[in-house]
Length: 248
Image 1: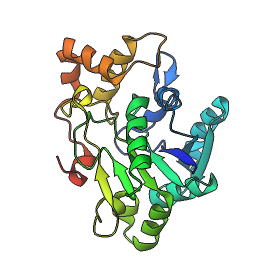
Image 2: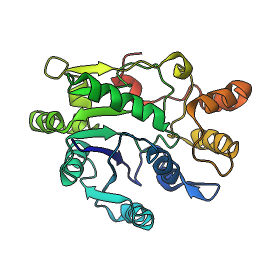
Image 3: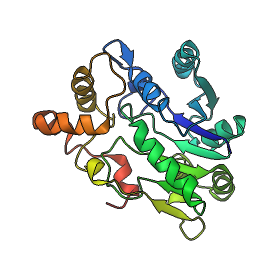
């Protein structure tokens, strides 16, 4: 088995263009994501999957500077981009971590990957079919064969734009399972993703609490936000696109 994490990112984000390279304490958000994802013990390789658009040359350059694999494909057909990136690396298991989740906890990634690998009965295991984790801690693990099957079945450009959405919404075809958060991580009220300027402000405040560290845990983040409720309030109530595709 070859387990490959793929991170889809592009500069032309509809809500906050260029967010992936927004610097915080001198490092782009993508840098924090990669630092943290590289700490997961269940991943064999990481591939950043961006588009062939010239705007995304800066993403390629940043990956090259870090020695991180970068695949370039379709800008709008994210399903195709993910599949080709994973096939490029001969992956049998794909691990999807979204580019707007710079504070992803590697232990959360390991938890979901371990569940998928131990169960040996699902095509897809994720922690985002239902909302039990904070937004920004989404991890999806799936058989690359199942992803390829979904690419052959799905003809909707709108669905393909959301990568694994066809699998997630067709439990009659694929065996899917949601991993619920254990009590220490069960905080669906918190938002740790980056869609807006308010989210950037929250990221800055959290990261500034752990200077020089990239290993601070989700538990430490939750503890800080609980002690500083004014910070977590900064990005509450903002509409999130993913909510239309998720059971809460």
